[in-house]
Length: 276
Picture (cartoon, rainbow, N blue to C red):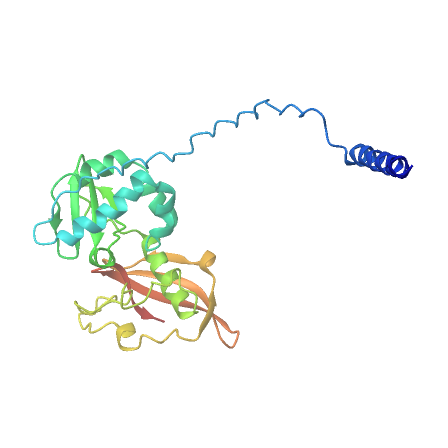
């Protein structure tokens, strides 16, 4: 009975253990089969476009004839001519030493200009020039010194190619300096002289007793300028190379008076010599 009793007692225990094992398997959720792996391939990435930047176009080589003894002149006008060919829209702003309308007119025929520049340059008394095809391209020494020479373009054989527009623009530049608003920050008397140097006697009236230009002796005669009426400016041809420009000028006190400024042609074109 003892053996039978032990077997009777063990049977319920075994049954409980087996039942617990079955319950644990049911709760663990252990799969009986492995889930198939997703073998579908990922979508192919889009092919990136070619973003390689093409090399810049080569800058045209503008041919400028050599100037014996003055290589800087050819270099300075070549810088301008290269812009005229490759970036013409930038030229007016860089050539602020010329009246804007005049520059636009003189620089219109690029082919003719390049044809003239291809000839040897000639050193003159006050300017360097290239002539070809009936056209002359002339640059002043102050333009050469700047490294970017904005020339005058005029018919070959023209002795006096400066015009009243040049004289009026010289007055505009001078008065703009005096009023504290130069047409360009680089426009100073040292770099771009506008006052006549007095290389020849100043004698606009033809008295034969000329001396130095009065404005050279007193360059600050218009230093009190606050404003001027450029639109009311008028030019009157005088004796020889002399020319008078009349313009209303307002000083710092607010008073306005018409000034007569007498100019002549000097090494850098029209220069101012007297104010009355």
